[in-house]
Length: 338
Figure (cartoon, rainbow, N blue to C red):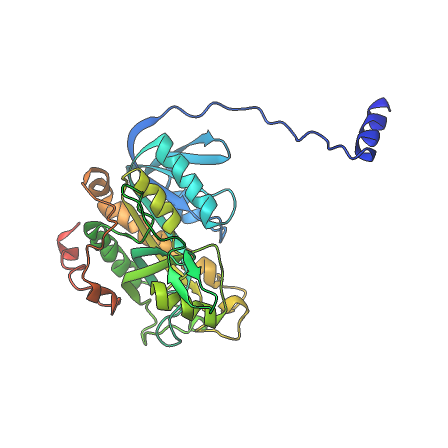
């Protein structure tokens, strides 16, 4: 009874109750085992493909981040399902992972919103992150026009915070995996696939846009596209930046899950299929996961031992991005690989 009175008087006086205290846990000891890092988005909550592939899982906690180590197809990995949605939180998890583990490549399989016109891109299409841009980083002038970069006047020695690129050798490996998965995938009719055979399209030289904005406003999206040229709007530039700070290569594949261009009347541009089938977000995430698992199964050892980079200057001719569905030389060695 006395405790109730004390609590009541504390609240009546405008005081605040102390926040719940959590026991502090020492940060984990640095894990020197060479591993592939995998960032798993919080949503859609469909994790079975990745978790079922993980053998001998062990949990390692660092603050609010719950990492799982183990092997996938015999390749040492560490993965994290981000604790809550959002690009920034995912990047914070990436930073903790990069700090705690000996990563050789950081991988992100995700989903994204399409920004190309109807008939050019649809849910289920595959976008490879040849270039990541932060399309929320702009100066908005009084007259409404946009200029890339919130700030100007870069100082000598300042960290690079502009576009980031995939290593060409890594992009080639990912292209082969994406092609194999696409060739065995038939998209449902309710997703309105672009190809007549209903296989996913692959955008090999994708410019992936990242921001904390989900925009279904065409005027805004067109304005940012004119500046940053992104073809989707949910890449992971933030985690790519985190990896670049540690000189760790980053590789991303995203599959289109929604598009207000393709489905202008649907809520958030998300097509609705039969309730007996996975929704477009789950469908897209499963395709992304299958591509990543194919990459690890066939090229995991190469990813662990290869000397890859995280370019801040484009290693690709500008013309490669003019028609991102043209693979150019990316598929040249697919048949030579196991």
